[in-house]
Image (cartoon, rainbow, N blue to C red; front, top):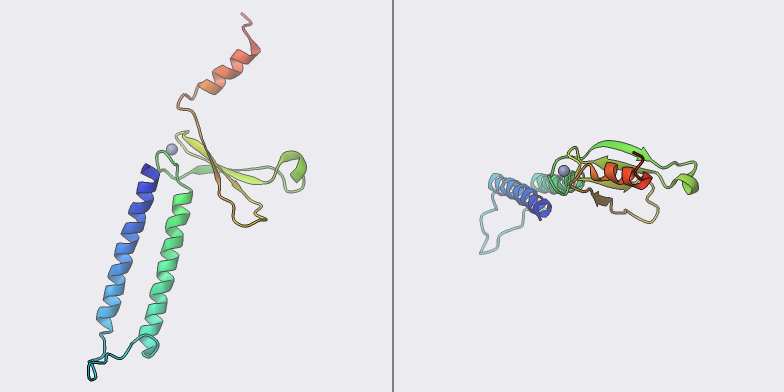
Length: 150
Ligand SMILES: [Zn+2]
């Protein structure tokens, strides 16, 4: 829930800044005085207002892309940036060793994000695998499988 709350907060912050920029744009290019209760439109008739509107729209799309891209590579638990990308699989031995993927991990061990490099059938969502809170569990499990030797 914290992960989605952070995402909603980032979207709300970006929307507030972009809404303010739109207000500045409308303040800088005020509407024409009404002509017999008809207000002529600015968009599509005033070249520089239309160009500025296009720039604002491209800024909105870019900021939305950055917000989503940043959120994708964050830990689902602690919200820190995922680090240490490791390439797994092989392009030349795809059937033997698995498809090529990039794995990112949380620096505090909360989980692993596996992202496929090969995306044939459209954009695939990366797979998040949470880790156990007990970091010694895997080590102890491997020693239990070998059995008591002492
Ligand atoms: Zn984490």
